[in-house]
Image 1: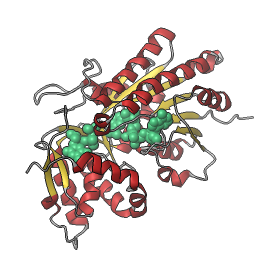
Image 2 (image 1 turned 120 degrees about the vertical axis):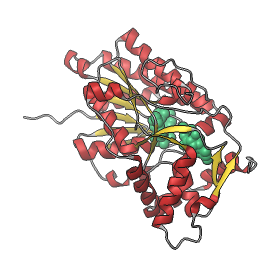
Image 3 (image 1 turned 90 degrees about the vertical axis):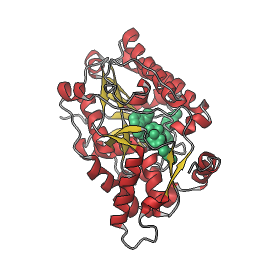
Image 4 (image 1 turned 60 degrees about the vertical axis):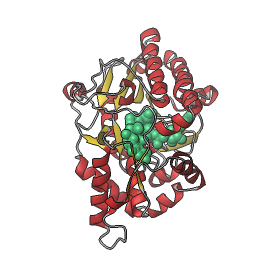
Length: 363
Ligand code: NAD
Ligand code: TYD
């Protein structure tokens, strides 16, 4: 008799990266998963429409900080791993109001760790050894680099500068402490900026694609020379699966695309892709829509990730180049009008008004 494989518990699996992870996990492993998501403004069941009727995907709406709910899910489904994506994730929103970031990213992670610890401590020896808690985090916890500084390694000091990155740093420290103090077999990944299908259009790349398609200004903060390292989302999801399968408990793995780009170059590349895909558009050349706006307060100048550890120890590397991934992403937004209409709802319009209307045009 063969027993069915244990599921994993994914949190935040209706958001951008979480949904891509869920879809990839089911397609590549066929193993069941339970998806716990609060469905905040960023969570969207339309991202999961293709697995809606699939018995391998069990969706539960709820909060990672709800200890009773999490304990019930753990007892009922007996997952062999928890992958924690759930978070408030947008720097600009954290500047407008940090409360939810502390609530979910710090307190929520603490409560989730406690629920998981109680479950894990009661597991039989074999299952206990094999269990993993993977915490998905960001490169932003390391702070900002100068132009000639070496890229972030896993040994770089934490120097978070925004309410978002400070709250993620807090969660990383809790995860580390739950391993050191209680022995919980944790893994932490710190990844650079993701882009790809299903990203909520408050983040740079989807915001610029949609504004450009609609002939609206493309807001570039400051001088547009802030640098981010970009990774296509499916490569991040593959990295998480690799770390989950082969990472050593207690270890941290930096994930990135070896792809540093200044924001202005990213925006221009999107404009060129749209010029090519929409030869009849009245907004061509889309670069005309670029509008420099006042900078984000405390805006980190540069992030860069040293990925040598995950490559050397676990054999992961990105498969999609920035040029391929960006074109694929632009195409995806052009082809998913209904999804776009669904997310550009009342709440979205309120955010755009709050973040951009008060910014005076800088030039
Ligand atoms: P997202 O904002 O698109 O999605 C977050 C998801 O978490 C949403 O579905 C939301 O409903 C859910 N959620 C929020 N609070 C919750 C709570 N209390 N309980 C349960 N669910 C809750 O974010 P994303 O871009 O997909 O990021 C996912 C994770 O990856 C985050 O932890 C983020 O810090 C990290 N990360 C993101 C990037 C990036 O570029 N987007 C890069 C590195 C790391
Ligand atoms: P974002 O996508 O918000 O990610 P993060 O702040 O986590 O890196 O922003 C990416 C970069 O783009 C960042 O340097 C800020 C900049 N940016 C703009 O110039 N204009 C915008 O409208 C947005 C949302 C971001």
